[in-house]
Length: 462
Image (cartoon, rainbow, N blue to C red; front, side):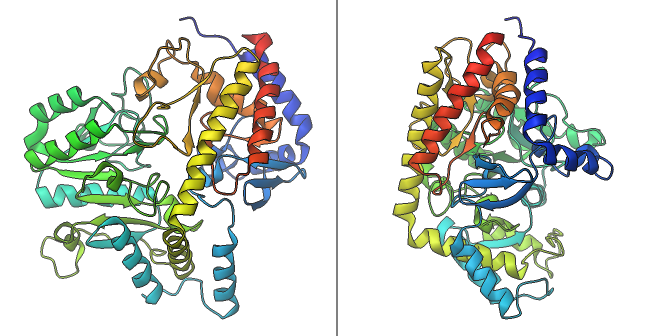
């Protein structure tokens, strides 16, 4: 299908936005003098410029221009409870007032207590903390290669495991998710990365027949992030566990996104599988930079100081940071105690959001779908990738469908809609992104109105 040219529409939206947010525009111009592209994370730097935020509370932001912005990005989908939840900020404020919270370089009680909760809620035997999802996946793959003595790593096309050298292949859709996604990586690494299909059990079986006895691990997001914000099928995850065990490879579940989002623990529980290693991040920190590798003690013992086959997993200067560990302990304790209430609310809000958005676009004669919206594992999925499929019958259960321009108009959902909604003071990524317990019914109704207004801006150009 011939791709639409949105250049005139994007120019119109950009001009309107420049008038709408003059102070953010001015600050962005200054930022360009000191920061590449004006910031330190590409996904945050929408064109022509991002809103510069001065306050964040619950579902809402405030920018330099004084706009109140309804936010569905929510800290890269990390904020289950919304921005700056009082249950966490009050604990941090108390700690700082009492003279504790910044970096010490020493272990403390908080790290032990956070580790105890994480192990108990996920079934892990041991855990080691670090500071980012990228580091957690990198360490997990390194552990797998050391433990098995094997050299190949299998990942999913469209799967994002951070800027981890062992996973920077098959992320972007070029000629079928088989390209390397960063310059500067040696072929000695990228040639060892094999790419399979998400929710494609037949292809997964073929991969293990071909490479199984050389595979150190299969790293999989049970709820894929950049590839669609949708869950894997039960059949697929169980096949992954069966095949890795048969071929003596490790199964690593990357739960940086899914951990503590759907229940107070690992989503692996919902699939009734026990992985060898799990990677956590985002939600577990309660808004602070906390990540972890958790799993079998036999594997994680490779990081022990006296292990003759030691894997150097130091985690970084700020691993186990006191304030971060306090936030993690406080957040995890809160969601464990209030699990039924919190996750029931998340699911109900998610269903309402999808219905409201779909109906809003239908009112303007535009057909939209959410990726993976017919799944049986997580029917109340609070992660949302909104799409404009060319035909209604497409399943939209794989990254290959979502990013194929013949199937979906990804430019419309990712770029055009984002800027059109920002003019309505609604911030989205990937078409929407995530809902939290802080989003109210009134907020969702506002989102519906914003989608209708955005659709009216867009329709003349379709």
